[in-house]
Image (cartoon, rainbow, N blue to C red):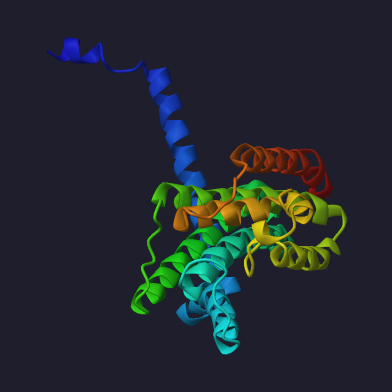
Length: 275
């Protein structure tokens, strides 16, 4: 019996190799977990209140738009609910905006950590990405809960379309954020410049209006903005009657190309400047 069982056991050399790989993976996850905890404690003041404010800000942003339209007695551009219209647009755009901005800031604030041999720059980036995805997910859940409490159905008519739209916004934010890491490594002023740039992207992304209601020439130009594409992507999940055609291939390829460019900058530019 023992002889039969031994045939299924890997040789001693392979056992040592597997053990080393398992130890390396566990060590990597420990480093990643420690970076995430440090990130949350330093950015949010080490308190639940600080983190709650960050989670609640996108929600407050969406409801501020609702308040402005309600005060001016303006209806939603589509549908019967101002809350649902602005929530679907604002949360999508802000998920992209926060991820792309905070990934850039992570490298600027946590660069001294890369002096430790266990910590690499890509680990800092990945830890910040995970924290921002969790924050965006909680903001989305909080928004849906408030919308439901107000008596509005927060669930999309086509959940697959809406969920993939949110995932596309996350991918776009990661891609642009990694590119920002490369840019800010040799042009630190881009940290301020990008804030102004995202303001332009936000105002033209269709959060507060429907781009397809614009003249066709202007709409064709706006469609080059991938943020417009992801906002329309999510909204078509909530409003199947919305007369838009999302260019899914363009949006995904744009994000993947930007991500590849950002990883190349991180590998061949940022690392050399930090060594």
